[in-house]
Image (cartoon, rainbow over all chains, first blue to last red; front, side, top):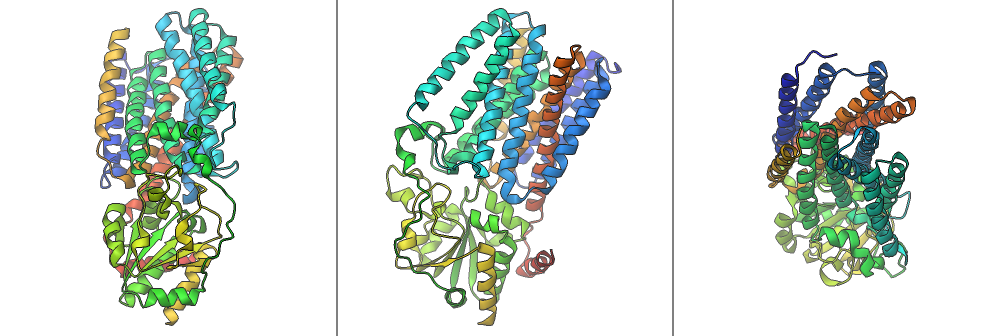
Length: 457
Length: 109
């Protein structure tokens, strides 16, 4: 259906592009974030409607059916997925976007005559394919379907170099000939490269890789805009590529890491120090009543939540425990590490869901000076973010990451499922410290018991 | 559109992209990543264009697959970001009594 003139189409796309810019701007500030996201969705809707009104499309019913299918698949998953699985979901959505871009690229090859358009096609295909398969590997890692430790093997660097060389050679050939079969081969090389790229990344760094692949998909979409001569795709893709790059670097610096170190650090041998073996060194474990006494008669308590809390869905219980302690006159705050959990800000989202009072949430820089005046730190399902190895052990995979310095407090109580090391796979010396006690069990379960014991005090 | 115009637009968009997210607090990193992720789902426009031009059934099949994937990215991305931010929005500076009230509701689940 051609209802809109090319001029009005361009204006509508421009409005959509401005919506995307304002969406990103809005998402950067807590007050305007939700409005920003809705504005982005409005921009996307405007762009799609504009497209249908501005050009003649064959197979219209099939296309509408495909959009319906996609919506029916996406909405229930997006609405129902557990908070703990949010990072996997974002990674998955990113991957399919990259896959879509790669397919758009290869389908346009038959229409492309100019060399620079073919270069853009090759770029779209390769980056889209890397993003697709790379995201798939991050999903597998986050779901712990494959090991979260860095996977390296002796031939991996050689394989990566070979993959890059094959990609370059294949790209040149496809640009010169426009041959479809070679293009399919190139897609395959892109898929392999994506897997090789993400395999050596350690579990704790996966969120940063998701952000990086997100920027990649943005670039692939931008290139597809050049291929199709569509300014909106170009602008939207470039925006995501650029902002995603900045975001990736910001996330990495919050962890005290460099992006290059994360992607290629495993080859230096450093992060292979990780282990999932259970240590049999002696620790001091105690019961929920003892923990309740320690907490109930303390003056200042800092609660450090981690992924274990998210897994156990213990966020409501922990807020209830904080409230019960406050009622006894204990000053309770939450010490939030920016990358605790499986994604940056994970704990903020989780505690926000449980309506934790805003003024009790402390960021890393705020809470660290407070530990020396704290009687008890209750670490719930967190490990790597309080691991002193980040400060003391050079060569440890988390070395250099800012941590919550809980060892400054008088006492530390860990609620842990087992002695298994955290996501990064490094043993935590703090667990064996004389001032540390451990309460083993599911976080929510342990919290409920401690809560009941506190109420009985 | 000629190459130079496209290049101009690209370069300007890069700077806008750098600029808009330059100051973002770490607690919003995840929603921002998720929102940006949704925005690149606009590849749906590209997928629909190629599907609308496809004549060969094989190519059409691939194009429709791209439409499905792109829709999942676009729609799912915005919905999941909204869900994340909905939880942030619920967090107003409330006193502990309000927190206690809501935890009771959670127990009922």
